[in-house]
Amino acid sequence: MNRASALAALLEQPTLWDVLVIGGGATGLGVAVDAAARGLRTALVEQSDFAKGTSSRSTKLIHGGFRYLKQGNIALVRESLHERGLLLRNAPHLVHPLNFIVPCYHWWEAPYYGVGLKLYDWFAGDLGISASRHLSRGETQEGLPNLKSAGLRGGIRYQDGQFDDARLAIALAQTAATLGASVANYARVVSLLKKDGRVAGARVCDAESGKDFPVHARVVINATGVFSDSVRRMDEAGAPPVIAASQGAHLVLPRQFLGSNTAIMVPRTDDGRVLFIIPWEDRVLVGTTDTSVSETPLEPRARAGEIQFLLEHAAQYLPKAPAKSDILSVTAGVRPLVKLPGAKSTAALPRDHVVLVSSGGLITIAGGKWTTYRKMAADAVDRAMAVASLPRKPCTTEHLRLADTRRRSGQSASETLPGIGGTGPLSRRLHPDLPLTADDVLHAARHEMARTVEDVLSRRSRSLLLDARAAMEAAPSVAALLTKGFGRGPVWEAEQVAVFRELAKGHLPQ
Picture 1 (spheres, helix red, strand yellow):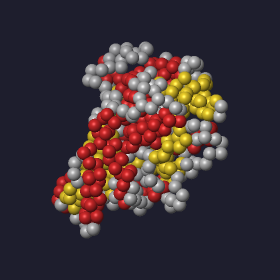
Picture 2 (cartoon, rainbow, N blue to C red):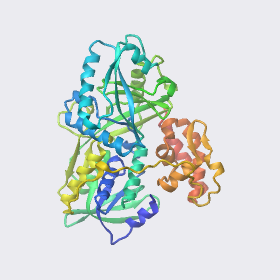
Picture 3 (tube, rainbow, N blue to C red):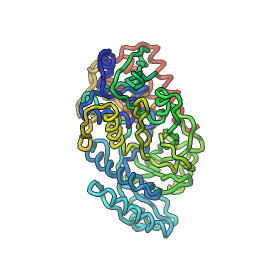
Picture 4 (cartoon, one colour):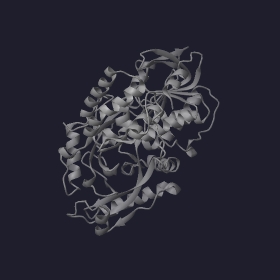
């Protein structure tokens, strides 16, 4: 995966792409994989970095959505559980089963939630993980030794999938590139091209050089999540909005707060969401909230009320109540939900996806969630082929193994960028509290299109999420490596450190 090569392909003026995908999050990357796997000449552009937005800010779960059963959305639960099974099979290096326990403190909870989880098992069918089962009080305490014991009656154990969202996004980008697609980050669409009233491509600006250029395509797919309406208005100025934005926040705490490899799932909180307290990367992830928002910035920040909500609800289940001073990092993401008339809150909106086609032929894929990205992509490409009168080819991604982005033992990036010397010091950790080495930084820059300190510390590694303060301290070392590797100068290096540290402040509770 090489950005220079991808840009060179995009700059070829006579090139006519079959499909141009706008958006490098889960959905857009999934579309690029699907289209390329069908043999379509595919290009993808992303205004910032891959998974910069919502797709790197999830609860890190590949799941059926237990709460959707209560909403009566059986179709979404079935679809999600099917896709969960496919991901466990097609990306076992990135998605793995995780044990959950639903703690029960009232007499009615065990039978009520137990029936729901048996339905959950049944809907998974042959792609299920393992059957749920009731636990005694002692078994629940054994699985969750740090669970608050006062009033505990027992629990229910079940399994769902866990993953690293940003790393799965990179795997999708690499899979698309391997299949022949040209994917480029920091390439922003500034306008759509039209021919005879039909959308025929886009004018794209390379954020690094400042140059813009046309990219011609038979069909354009808008997969920009919370920014979908902005792209739709490039096609039709008066296009009514279809996105209802909902912000979700997550806290990261030290591992000792949970003290177990089993997660806690609380089926209902005060705002109607499910609360998860999850072991992740030797930390504890607590989330999520559901707050309707009117603005969709590229770098959303958790609100004080969201942070307090999560702390208070975690304290209801943990014997030691976490405080703001315990928070290692806090992150916020904005969900691109599809508007429904009469919905009282974003928590009540379904996570189903829709495929829209404008009068000019622009395809928009909106809504959905990480778990169902593959089905979303298949539906979007099916529609795109029909709109563009492309030869109909079946989707092949149900059995497509995704690229393995793990570095092999002994694999070094020491000579992959100019100006970098021997391998010895490159294996050193850049900070005692982060599992990040100099070699990791160079590998990300050479093989994974990392262009900035933020790319490395936020998404190629998860340093910013694991410990925002430690990431700020590691920033100068990362910047120095990238500066030397890219042949940049001291001004760029200083700017990178300053920009990242300012961004990282937003990942600490204020």
